[in-house]
Amino acid sequence: MPTIPSLAIFSGSDVSLDTIYDFGLFNPETTPDTLEILNGGLDTANYGPGDGSITPQMCQFGSFAMGYFSGFTRTNKIFARQLSTDLSGNEKQKHIHTELSASIYLPWAPSALIFGYQGWFQQDATVWNIDDASNLDIEDWTLRLRRRDSNGTDGEASGTRAHLPWGRVSIDTAIETPSDYPPGVMHPSAWRYISKHRTITTAAAGFHEFELEVFSGVKNPDKAIAKLKTIIGGFFVLAIR
Amino acid sequence: MAVSKPTSGSTITPTSVTDMYDSVKDVVNAVPASSVGESAFGPHTLPSCVPNLVGTTTSGAVSSALTVADAVTITKASHNVMLAETEADVVTSDPWATIVEITKSGGYTLPPCKVLVMFDATVSTIVKDTADTVHGQAWFSVYYTVNYGGSDVTQWELRNMGLIHTTQNMTSSTSTLAANVLNKQVSVWFLIDKTHLASDWKIVNIKAVGAVGTGSQALSRRPTSVTFQNANLSFVALHKDS
Image (cartoon, rainbow over all chains, first blue to last red; front, side, top):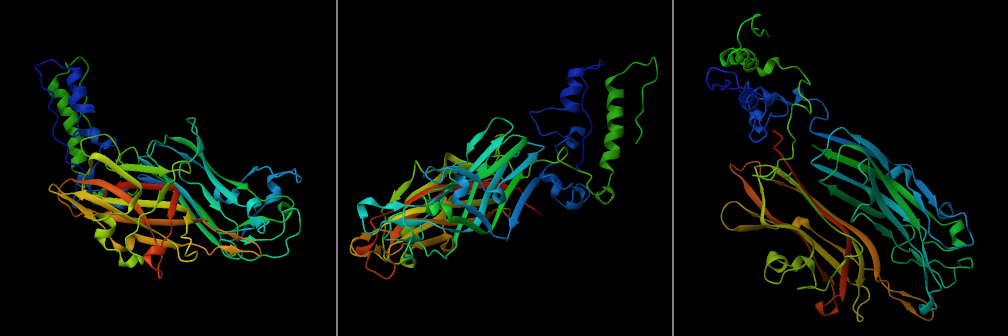
């Protein structure tokens, strides 16, 4: 414990409430060295050895940080046709990656809120019509991490977007059944690793929601069979007071 | 603990106030560490483990991001093989181009502490040389500059470098598809341990830089450019843990 000094509030024979308040209870301008030190004022001076110290077992879990992690090792599959009920169209719609999303409550405003996702992905995506370089039909998948909180934040977390490129090419057009699948910018059987994080220093206390949005650029009718597999993945949030 | 209460009708004086205070203070100060129970302290009692920047009320945590819109395209290279690049090649004499950086005029002044540095980025494209559509490489390195009260000191480590390879172009019966798009992910996370210092120190900047190379092929065949996007560079300072 800190060595708390005696209280110095003498200003004549009368009791001065202002003096008691400033010197005895709380003075936000200075590091408290009164009993107020027991209200959030313990500091690095208390880390040392001896009776003026605090040790780890004295601290409640979550005193300095709160964390959340959700990992999985069973393959998650999102089919391109889940993203649209209009199988005749090629419009992009999003799907929430339920394994890489989270909702947490923070009882205090953290100094730093670090969050992100990691995963091994395997995607069906093709470049069609490769014999006509001026008329290529390129497929891909996009991941976007969205953050919402109880203070009105709602939007994409900067710098956390990821694209999963095409893994095969075909001489056919997208309206035909593919007849050949030579590898593209990655082998279609390969796993693509993605790891993205974001650090927020202005996060407020309260609810925070994180959703990894999956967008498909797969064309019809490949849309009926193409899918994004997440082989292994995890989502993490670390809030540090 | 007992506090001497003033009796009814007595006058409260500064002395009686200090007597009450001191009676509590004496008890608190006399509590030995061995008598403090488990989980006695919580968030209401303990400070943040992220130190403030010295002389401020700003937490020692900073982040800088790179989105799709502000992608960085780099054409820099000194050698063909990355391991031939010296610290001077990367940092000073002919430095690699900046992907994203954290910097502040006068630096970030911190107490002795540990600093977690995190860098994630996507290499979205490597535009290969027309004479070599196979051997393009994107290189990246993360380093930082600190100040202990004298001149700035740049701390660069080989282990905080990395590279990715490009992909060979696709050839069909009638055309070639230039496989410039990669969208490969790179990450470098490391810890700066300055808990041994006796006084405050500064992080002048933290930089993620990049360049292009060819590996086994001649430098003349290096890629035209590499583009980084969707990046985050962050640091969080943490008080010593022992």
